[in-house]
Length: 145
Image (cartoon, rainbow, N blue to C red; front, side, top):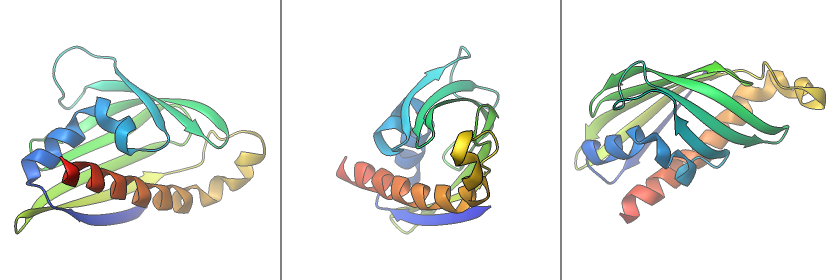
């Protein structure tokens, strides 16, 4: 498990709306190439998505479910299938005129094949480093808008 916190110079509603539009994920999450919605209706707990990623071990597909959705406050995504099972809990809170974004992440290297299976025990640390970079990109994207 890992925790990352960043402050974004935008109001919580703006950050939440961008984060909750999962089709935006490829603009800030470097490994994600595409996100497709699998369930009808608006984003809410129970909504499912297919996330196509490019990992060092090759292409990967994860089906992901929104397990928590509290407007302007919290979103939790949990993989339901695919390699590298994960749960990402995003929490937003006001920080003056900014938003404090906290990510609590759980991820494993289960499902990695070939020589990459040997790196499975290092997956949480590697993904944490990657998510720090991804959240820095999210911050840049949002602060430019």
